[in-house]
Length: 566
Image 1 (tube, rainbow, N blue to C red):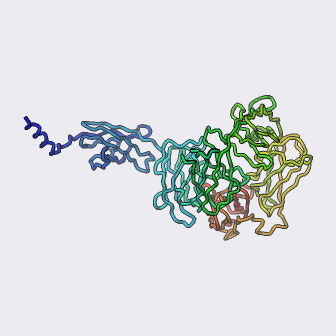
Image 2: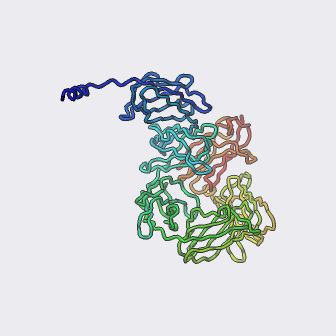
């Protein structure tokens, strides 16, 4: 009776050949067009071993057919780079007789470039990250989003317009960079060679008042007395309440923000000097209480996008209040700490509405400011240029001082842009207007007894300051060398330099102030040589004549004149 059992045991020692099966299908791209050529990887789902089989490529119509042993498989469909198609996968496919697997691959756009350090050495392992320029959302698909051993990348992303960032590992002590509004909706984009500055690792913790760690809290880093945030993509806290990020050398205000939805106010570590790796003191967030307001114009229509600011008294330290703009119905709701504040609510300049200031608000609990009525004011359009050259001056600051109260009127967007222009909203009282130059080489302007009863345009010319030396006129740490040769018949070479890490833009303008070309845009520390090939932004050789080289770091502007003689 035991013989059949013995026979089964013996048979189990000899493997039975797997039955051959057929795996086939069609791979298409947009418009149901067959994808060819395309490589197909077949791996055993159980042990992930790669099978070598015939027929692992598509034909001209996108069809494939291969014979494999019966089993369970993972398939990877790899189109060529030139196809602009994403790799596709199918996992856990059971194959016993004939199994058909069709797949439609989606198309993307490539962004390419290389990443190096300040010494020119290639940086491998840098993550290429994307966020929609309008919404902040991540794209549906991203492929090959790391730099290789040579520091190069060719990353495929779903079509769109993105803010593209280069994010090295924190341990590398390289400062991440972000590039706004990179157009990848209809064409590829090349970012070229980008340099990541050296920096230092800053580590901090965020807790509640009992020192319990807060996960998913967020650090923001700004320059003192500035609302501009540095790009710190690794600044969200872990479950232990800790985060580390890399900053270039400098002095910063570092804000601790609570997790979304948590009832805490922010806390700021002010004037933190970073010149080596640094551990911040723990930032324990105070309880937050709500301040609400309803913003309307003089006829009661809600005003959206009003900006709320709270400055503690008497120190006037700005409390960081995330998501502090009024919504579509004009409502504001922010969390603040229990202290005394001066609160400002400022509508967008485009509305021509005046801000409202609450000089002293003692917060002891939830506080409703009620309906805030913004009266209509006047636009003051200001355009500031440099003496002799007529070049627009970027970074000029406007202060409207009330001669009766001695206070400076609150004006939004009161710094000139790269065209030398800005627009502010004022009321009809008398002001002393102070126009402050961004560089030592140009003298400030004073316009006393200035008053507007309607929209007004001011054309201002800043003259050279006779007390400033040549170096002072260039601004601290920023320099634009005399171009050579000058006059030139072909390429023109100059040197730009910055004493601290700075985002510099070198543009070429004609004498009418129109932008002709942008030979350089990027981050600079020290001296950097730039060559202009005497071609415009379209690659067309420009006519002979006089041109201006303009160097700006967003605050300081320098110009040099160059002559082309073809």
